Amino acid sequence: MEILAELQRRFGDAIVETHEHHGDATAVVARDAILTVLAHCRDDVALAFDVLMDLTAVDYLRYPGREDGPRFEVVYHLYSIAHNHRLRLKVRLDEDDATVPSAVALWPIANWLEREVWDMFGVRFDGHPDPRRLLMYEEFVGHPLRKDYPITRRQPLIGPAT
Image 1 (cartoon, rainbow, N blue to C red):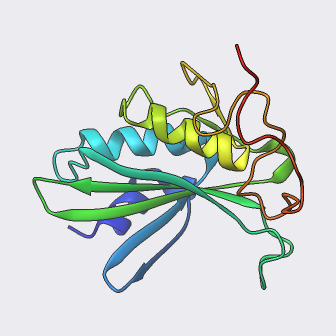
Image 2: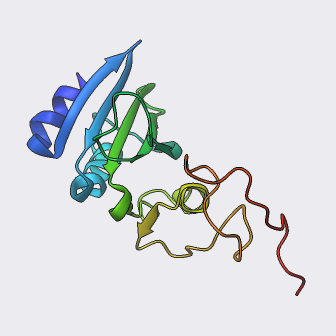
């Protein structure tokens, strides 16, 4: 089965763009459809993407050729043990609305991965059960993997004593 064709057939315009590179299938999904598409990828026996291998983000601020597009992409890397195939799903987000629904109900591991993306990039996950910072302390100002984070900013590397 051709995975990308199946997703386009089933979800239509919710699949914004598709491409393959070196055998890796990628689909850009509309934000409001991402949970439905993720659930289908996990639950459909022909797809059976039972593993969320990774969830990360990309900041395209000042990236050549992306000046007018959305600033962020949230990227889901899925794997099927039964079929030994992979899929990358992306959601594009504008800077002023960098929010996407949480996938924790589908894959519990998303809890930690979404917290890391929030902490490093400032992308929020609606419905996340525990939206605390993961790597930085709560009082840390900013999100250090954003391209506009001031690298010369000085602030404590550890939180205040309790």
